[in-house]
Image 1: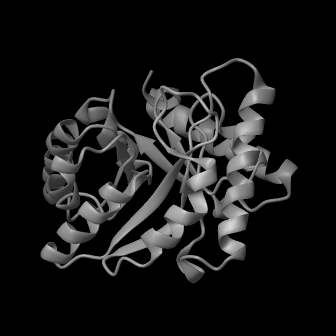
Image 2 (image 1 turned 30 degrees about the horizontal axis):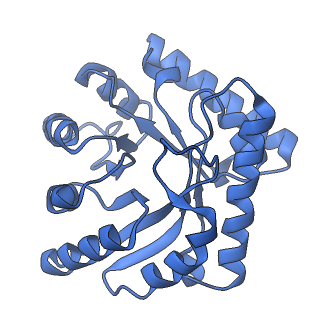
Length: 239
């Protein structure tokens, strides 16, 4: 078994153990594999192991990697162990001038944190005949260097996003502070869960609003304990 397969097996086991302790089903957790530091052979191994949700931070790298992955899937279309397609997630800060390129590759944009970006996504989705799934990114750590809408603006923004006909607001995304202090990490995730539940309580986005994307390689167990449904894991797999 390859090193990557071993690491993925450990991550699956850690998710299962944490879900068991938290009284949750591991089926409620989706892993988005962050490919930004990985070579194509490593990504191919991830796909062989059954992981079909892939995340990228930068549009230029996304274009390159998505082409390589598409070629791999095409070459192995007769292999029952290889899926027909993968799902790309844009998880990094997205500039408005890169929206059209992104939408040609991604059906989920996790990092929507301003009204202007949402409007741009809605306009280009309409032009391309798409309905794009988005997550509202909020800054729960209060760090000025982090992207994400302020917590206090989240409900108002969610209401505006939910009115856009070519966007589907399907949840929230946040990033914990980069710290060894687990209490600060937990507080950030707990705050995101509170906002998520508040938006659900207002029925903004309807039944589609069901994803809470938080937790990365160093803190995904805490994220699961605090209610994450989607994890973004890269370095624990590829480093």
